[in-house]
Length: 575
Image (cartoon, rainbow, N blue to C red; front, side, top):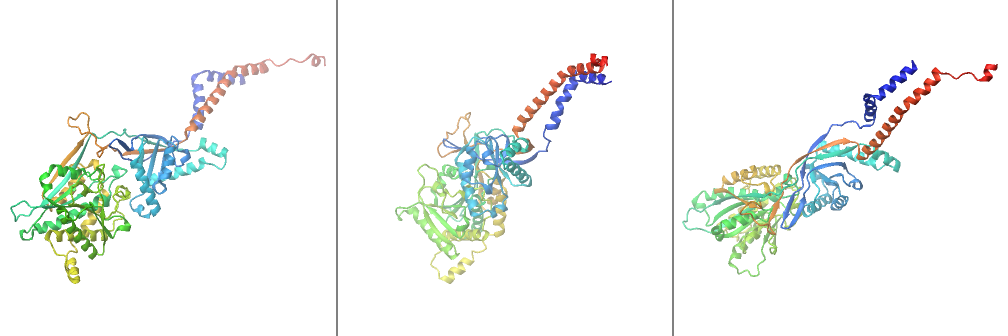
């Protein structure tokens, strides 16, 4: 019976089915258990060309093991939170040559909890991201329960990788779990034709038949920050249009009555591509040459809220004048004096900032697009280069509504006094009464509603053609108050097949498409585990193979012992 049993075993292992069973056993015993994947949206860092320079991220797909430890970042996907990020740490990560970087952003309300140091660190990181060229994909992920769970598990796994001893670290590196991050996205492609849309309206003096000079009110409405799909910039791209729309509403009531119409026309321009060298204003000037000659004064409105430290300061940016006798300068100086007085009456600080345009034709304030001494920018920022003007932190949470409305009321009062040539020579009590009649012109509810809308609608420069919902919404708002409202679309065409393709100039920006992707996080064994598993399986199969080969030898040995027992020795026989 025993020999028959061994015969059956040998016959089984001679067949393919037996060997297959032995092959599957180690896979079942050693393979890591399966885990369901977790997914979350990610947003790629902007990619663009400025002249001959490439900036931003030009990678897309991710398929790499994740880590939160810098020394383990080589050829992995590195995850980090905004709160923990600074320029030095980002440089250290990049030096490790990771396959991808994912930065987790807090929600809008959580940004209020960031310390001053954390905010400054992040602004430096944003500048570094926009000014450098990165061949790897760099993504932003919004903080969510799923993302934070993945990050928490990953940090726990990473902490075990650096065990208390080399042996423990080696064991953890082989048998510990890890996360594989996978995001499928096509490689960034250059946008051959970028469309922009100017939104215009006018208020015309109908009492006089002659063509009058005009006051030009302009504000750009587009945003530009490290992520195109997250660009909102409530202060940088929202407060200027809000003030312009409020002015249009107030002035439309005055121009509606012929007896109240001032002796100037007013043109409103919500300009496109403000973050692309103010191409919207440039297009307006090129296509409205006659109207540009009639501009007596140009006022650009930009980032009226400003920094928290400057929330009670109004800055007046204009070109340096060598002589005050210039005819164009007189109107600007008169408005400057009016604005300074009204700001002082409202309890605001007022400061004039002189600046010459850059020689490289890259403008920092919109009034620089308008030649001569007839233009100025009213802003809450003293420095055009402040990184907050292109930051994801400009999400509306730090808008001081009361201060913003006060600034808007000051601008409205100054414009009305300029249009109607109201004397500033008033007694103190008269000044107080005169200012009070302008209070309430700006609707706090309307301003807050518009700020909320801006904060919920990404509106990066390259997306805002005339059909974009954000553009249509602004057009409907302006058309309610201004006459001859229109949307004028223009484009930059860099497609090689286009007969009229534009050549890329130093001041032009060529955008690359920005695709939102879905990242999947799989909990898996580390890559070194696969190597260990392969060696273990090979050793196991080798042992099984040798064992199968030794079955006939074992069979023969047992057969000889059981069927042919040893005969008694001669001494035993003699006894």
